[in-house]
Structure formats: C-alpha cells, structure tokens
Image (cartoon, rainbow, N blue to C red; front, side, top):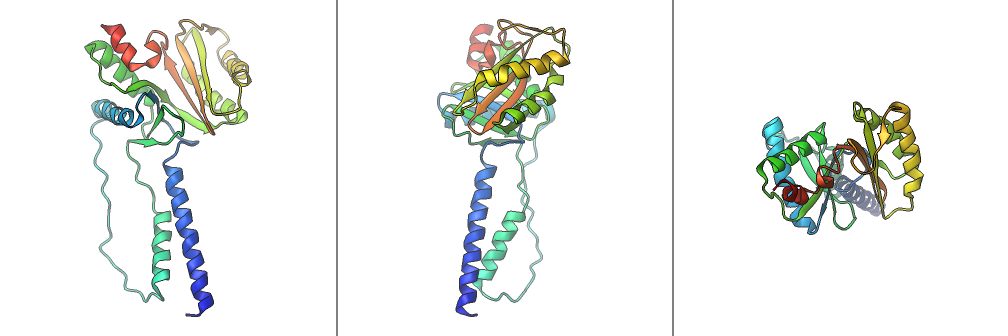
Length: 257
C-alpha cells in the first residue's frame, strides 16, 4: 500500500476512535429523552449503590426479576482477505459504533452536578417504583438508606431551553388530573435560566388544562417537578410532596416512627 494510503487509513482510524469515545461518553451522561430517578446524596458513589439496591428490590417485586444481559456472539467467522491491520481495526470500530446498546433496567449516568445522581431507567412509570419504596418505608418504619437522600421520579428530560421545557410540561400536565390543588417545584442549577421564566408559563399550562385546580404552596395534592441541571431539564409529577417529607427517604423514616 502507498504511503498516502497508509496516512489516509491512519486518519480514518483516529476519526472512528474519537467518534466511538464520544458515543460512549454521551451514553453515560444525562441528556434529553430519558426517564428515571433524580436523587441527591451526601456521598455520591455510596448513594448510587444504595439507589441500585433499593430500586432493584422493589422493581423485582413489582415487575419480576430482570434476566441478566447476555452477549450473543456469532459463531460464524467470515474469512476475508484484509488488506492490512488498520483496515481490520477500522472495521471493528465501525461495528462497535453500529451495535445497539443493551439497556439495563437501571443505569447511573453523570449529571456533572455535585450531590446530584440520575438513575436512567427503562421502566415506563418511574413514579410507581418510588411510590412502592415510600410506602414500604412508611409501613416498616425502617431506615433503608444512609447516603441516598431524596429520590424523585422523572418522566421526561429535555434540553434546558425555555421552549423545550414548556413543551415537556404540556406532555406531563395530563398526569395531574383528578386533583384539587397543585404546586410547581422548580430548581435551577448551573444554568442562566431564571425561575420566573418558567413559573408563570407552566402555571398557565396547568390552569388552562384544569381551571378548577388551585395553587397550594404549603400542602399541594400534586406537584410538577422541574429541575434544571446544566444543559438538561428533568420533569416529573409527584403526589403529596409535603406529606412525604419532600421525598427525602431519611426524613420519611423519621416521620413514620
């Protein structure tokens, strides 16, 4: 092969290596189009471990144990003439990029916000699991976590752009049906958006859909969570936020005793 050909293949290899690294990084970060659980912790690594334990325990009860992921390897090996080692490595990189990622039921992804954990989930309704966890704590009156503090179900994530957030809020508002009072739980971290940019338009979305529903900041029946974490906004709907100690698992335990 000519020297020019070798240089071209080396350049292509570098491109695919960089692309593969970016794809892996993106898959491990919080971003739009996800659902799961937004948690806070005073020790993140231990908080993630506790989140996995408590989520898997209750998901197994609700939905059955998840089958372990099995890597299916083809037994057929095609014997092709490969021009050189660079071509072979480039082909492998292309295959890795094209291969679908096997999703686990729960997967921690980076938020890049200190003390904030996001557990991405394949479950359709994260609220169902959180409700089961809280009900179990209230029933048993036993502390189940030490480092994992608050756990909020997140139904949708989007870019931290006002228009995108309002569209996401519109898709969630139907989940607030059959309640008399509501509140908005808006928190913004590491972003230049202001709470006032979101409070009024989201409140108008709720009022338009449910004109009889009243705002109650002290003890609302249902609340919409809007948490901006850098470039990503997490939205969800929670019930009895105040009565459930603001979804702080440790405080729920103390309150139940």
